[in-house]
Length: 409
Image 1: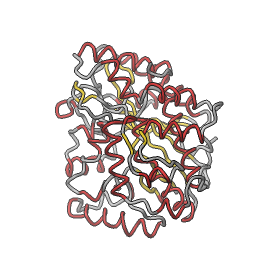
Image 2 (image 1 turned 90 degrees about the vertical axis):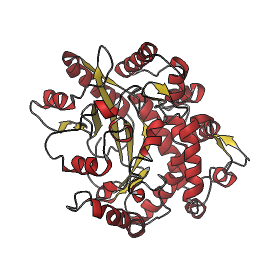
Image 3 (image 1 turned 45 degrees about the horizontal axis):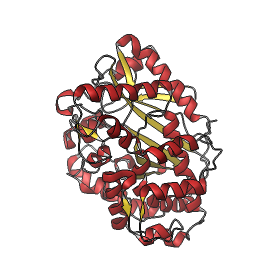
Image 4 (image 1 turned 45 degrees about the vertical axis):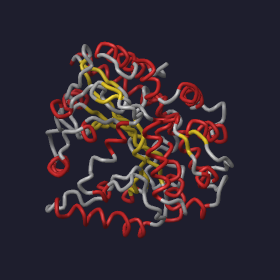
């Protein structure tokens, strides 16, 4: 069910999933998102409405997005709905010699030579970003993510939600990292998408900050501390004011006051919608427990500083579920009295506390707990120094997982 009025906290959810379009035979990127959308709509367009879902273009012409058409009342049923959208896209792509491929970065794409930006319709925003930051790079044109939008209604709900999200952001790559390869090689970093993401606007550092948002808990504080600085710093590079909007903010979670939601942006896309929705379910369950002060009072949650949270995030970007968290104050906010704990053990504890064993999200979550995030499983399958043939074979299996709605083993 999709609802139109402003929902209250944990009563409205938006999900956006991004996939690569690749050639069926070689799995090289294929920049035909415009042709796919035209096939679906019967005319050239950047958006296609499909009942409870929508399809839309992204910055790069080989990337396509599917999303909920407005806030859904709950996450139940969205995995099967998204899976049906995947199958519909693949049916339209097949005659074009193309298919969808998951994971957050194409494993051998060279963006300097292969990037084609969306060339149609209202593209002024894309052109402005390209002029300022040069979008022919991994942090711009070779990345596929999941955006999880969480509704709030008023300042009190915003403050509770923002405080909880800031605490959960640093450990999300332990569940969701899916980008271990860059241009055909392992870099030693599990979440390369986020590693590139946090540097892609270094020319104007205030836009992404430390990825972890500052501790501000009302709309006026948020605008004063974050948005006004963003607008001021971009102004010399944006004389026409094209980018003066709240989506300019590129932190790992951004307030979208125009639609009364906070958008989490640090999630890599998984092998199938069931995995993405299972991770979203776990996130929501933990956020709800934090907002209800199950493990720690709201005042303590709001005291968490940007620097210690960012240090945890950097460790988890690099090492995923194997990252060691040695911040005892951080662990206490989740009700854990320990000197150190791996991100994997922390998530196992949080999921056991918040997601019932009978929940449909548990099998995918248990699979991740047992075998690691998708990046770890891809590394195990292809190795740290694969040849093109071996890497292609592994990613072909990954594409089959998406087509069939199955977890990568």
